[in-house]
Length: 82
Image (cartoon, helix red, strand yellow):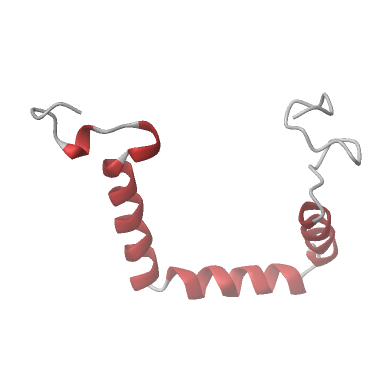
């Protein structure tokens, strides 16, 4: 970085502007009670008719499986290679 560039101008891994925006939005979500509402909605979904499918999706993703991909193939492009 040259001495004329602002630290906010850094992009890529050091994108400070996007990092601050994310933190501000996340803080607002928490302060407005969004976490409690989202947790209640998730609990209701797990207890509802789709609960079994949601639990299966949780288990398979915890094991590294990608929905719609053959078991054992966790690469994003489906080739089996990373």
